[in-house]
Image (cartoon, rainbow, N blue to C red; front, top):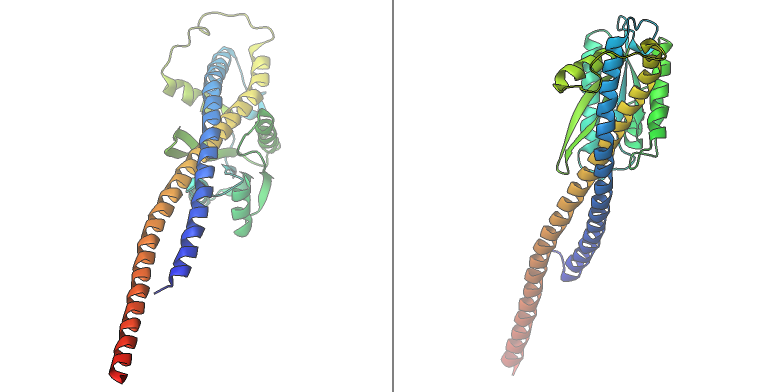
Length: 299
């Protein structure tokens, strides 16, 4: 059995750790509230962009001149994973990477080549450790992504697609449901056309503003050519915001569980320390009694 001093030192260490986890829980909670407000402000804009894209696409006679809307035989697929720059967030990073690796195995079974793009230090380090060839990596903004970060990612994906280096791009990230629930989704972001019309059908909502006859200036095809890159940036920005909120929610939950576990451990160690102290006291009493008996026998 460990000594009372050893158990006391361990209790102090666990208490210090619990202070840290509680502080991290409070920080994650504050950041989560800000991330949630950003998502709530972003979602109506993204939904309206989807409606606008669908309306202009219906008015267009042809979209063959827009590279990001062109579909071709798929030979090379880009997987873009959105992870965090830091750990201590439970299964947040691990579940994204597991889904990405499962998707890679599925695509490999279909005979397709996979190219990796990653956002976040955790995803980059995992892919590097497994010796994957990373086409492009972005780090440093997982906690608070800006629209410029989404633009950089979107421009790189569009460049790879227009140059024919990839034929499809899939985004894998954590979708924020609640502080306790983050759902991993894989979303096809390139080519754009099928994604737009599928979402329009699944949305099941009336597009009142875009109904009717309109005169477009310039032509709908030119408007669409300008809107498609913005739509891609918007979708990636929304995914970054969802991922940021999911990370803070996962970290808050993980730190809360860690604090609870630390409290349970302190209780068990305190009980163990009391037992050790009682054992020491009992041993000292027995030694005193034995010494007194020895003195009495000698007299």
